[in-house]
Length: 396
Image (cartoon, rainbow, N blue to C red):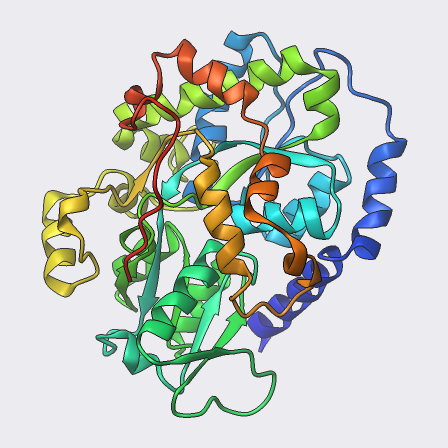
């Protein structure tokens, strides 16, 4: 079918980028470009998912211009392969990427770029067919993930193993009675695949979980943020060349993004409106009711999720999606440790010798985001402890 063909093609493209040799031609293109002018424009690349919200709000609300930098209209791309390709080649200079993808980019493909902030927390879920009521019911079935290097894959495999199931990647044949077959699929392809029952479920960023609910084709079995509390999903990724050669420009960019996150926390319904297809900029193709279900849900939704066990940690009092920009080292360290034990059908040789503390130190540049956070009143403004440390909480 067409969906499978597109997803396979995108997977192959991503797989090639996940190698030093595959990324090299794009890096050559980037390196051949002249260094951007000191006040050259911000060029945002994004996927039409709620992960991109801070970048889009910063553009919509004029925060980049307020900070003193020009910004072009954000470029919407349709797949992670397109987004990564555009970034590595230098066509865009500020993107949101799945946090495990940044680990690969920095250490697997040697892309000279760094995480400068988190884009959001949580904001993802495992959506399944209506008749599936627990993880064990996925045995012998197929579940879609957005990519191997994704927090979705990491959390899903933890849930499967906790239920005694084995995650596998079978190109041919059916999974056995205790296996769950994982397939890579573009987020926009997931709801149609679920509706046609070609897959039993998918785990992905919003609003595709909310979309399945509103369409009546599936239900949220578990929210990822209810497994790994306040995990990062997407992070803000920028070229190291900009960070080193345009530090003042870089600071202004991060200032605008941090300001946008604070605004979103206080204006969730307005955020849903401006992201929607009804919004002035039509940033995404999603209808307002779908985005409201994610960003500004009715109180009755939470009660329903507590009843169905989609939310098991009521005491956490976490939002379906939340926003805070600081890239905690403890998260990167734990992520690297878990990637080592995660089934990944892509280049993973670099993981064998990658130390979590080293990864946190070399992947993340938190100079700019710390200044930006302090400028708006500190981490407490984002509901966090003020000392820039935390302990990772993971309870399947």
